Length: 102
Image (cartoon, rainbow, N blue to C red; front, side, top):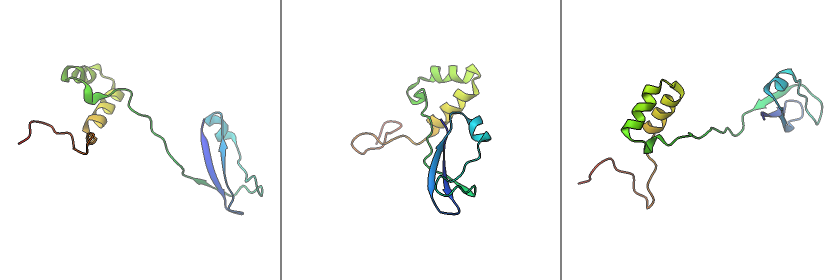
């Protein structure tokens, strides 16, 4: 459900409104619950992003090739973003290495 945060420009009251659908937000005329003013400022609050459904880093080269050949632009994009991202640190504080060390 979409949640929108506001600050009233008249009385500085902060509040949130939740709508069941985006269409409900489009049709609404929000007002301050404290003073009734329509002079509101939308606030940016925490933003969440979905996690990747697949762990592309653990795929074999053949599996990655099948993703590329699938023609599914969304999965190809997600794979490139995930595989191209910096690797997380391994437990114990070390960084994952690419090959045999010196």
